[in-house]
Length: 427
Image 1 (cartoon, one colour):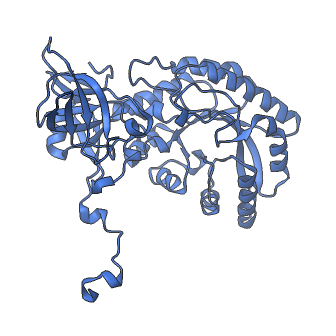
Image 2 (cartoon, rainbow, N blue to C red):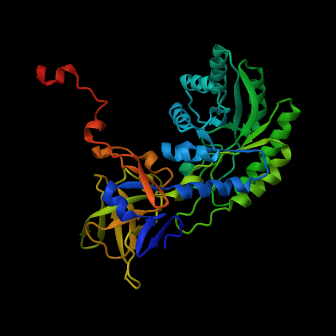
């Protein structure tokens, strides 16, 4: 059993909704990313339902998975978007997400990106420094517009997650120190082209414990009250994202329990609530389908060498992340499991998906599914070792569609130009 209702065994074969994964492998090839349309809808509705009756905006964090098909699903459900680059902004618009539901976050927005956001009339810029605030003022003034802003506050709260995805501690690069919020909001109020509308906070990703959220929300509520006393018209509180998912036996928060904390601390402020979920919506909605290329045995270890590599899924190499890996063909009951290292073909020792993972016997050509690969997976892929990007497939019921095909080498090199002095004519 996978523990994921959208990816289950039927007649001893793993399916994505109603489609056997072996059919996708035969028609699309491997490695390939496979997403469940139903999973995306279910996860979005679970969060939206938890906030029923409140004035809220779910702005999907595009950085988690920027597939246009995924974005279109959320657009049709009424979602907005949390973007961190001009490119993501354009992807969100292309997928049909209204500009008035787009929030532009990130510590390093260029003036060109600011101008793009202003041109399209986005909902909000999340400002992370005084330098950014002053630059945005200049850009907005030059366009004769006002930039709606929330200032990202760093509450110095430990999210108790991996150090590389913690964003709310004082030593992190994100946001304005909580203690300096008053003076930075005062600066914003004086600057031309700036319209203060909110407060933003985001403390990290893959949170399993709700306590850091409660500590953060208490601080945010106190800050909003203080800012309003100082004359600032705070009408939106942007709480970021970060709710974790189950990778390996974790017990993530129920969105209703998370919403209860928001109702307790933030709802009494009478503000619109903005949420920026990413992993929660897409993480368990996708898997990476791969095939065993070789089984290699040494004096001390056994290896399953897959056709998927760290260029396709870098999370294990970057974060020591755990992903459940299951055979597409269900093993017979009572099959003995043996520890194997599951690795890819990339010429790096870091190209390792799992070490000493108990697995049933596997052979050349067998299919495996790397689960919980919907977030920070395909979107972080590269063409290292001149390996083409894996195609992406979306399943809905008993049908599937290729939403991004595998490029050829000619397509991968189409942007390259040979200098004149290296052309054959001058050789």
